[in-house]
Amino acid sequence: MPDYKQVILVRDDLKLSKGKMSAQVAHAAVDAVTLSDAEDVNQWREQGMKKSVLKVKDLAELTVYEEKAKRAGLIVAVITDAGHTHVDPGTITCLAIGPHEDKRIDAITGHLKLMN
Image (spheres, rainbow, N blue to C red):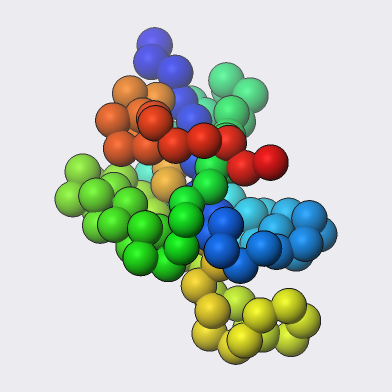
């Protein structure tokens, strides 16, 4: 059985606080799961729901990965903030991809660095 995972790409240029980033990542993870195929979600859950939070430079780079993932037939969830705290309303903060097979996601995001 192939390994499954989910990745969330976060914009590094926004310099979100750890709390704000955590909330945005959670929104993305949940949203992507609700959009995903039930069998993919089941396989992913059975394997421990592996996920990685990766950084991208800015909105332009995030958009490139969104398009690549869509072209590859992967589920994506783009998170737009309401703007009540740290960023302006309508700011796109992050993007979740999957859960899908590792190799499908790694083909697109495998070279990105972990968010620190």
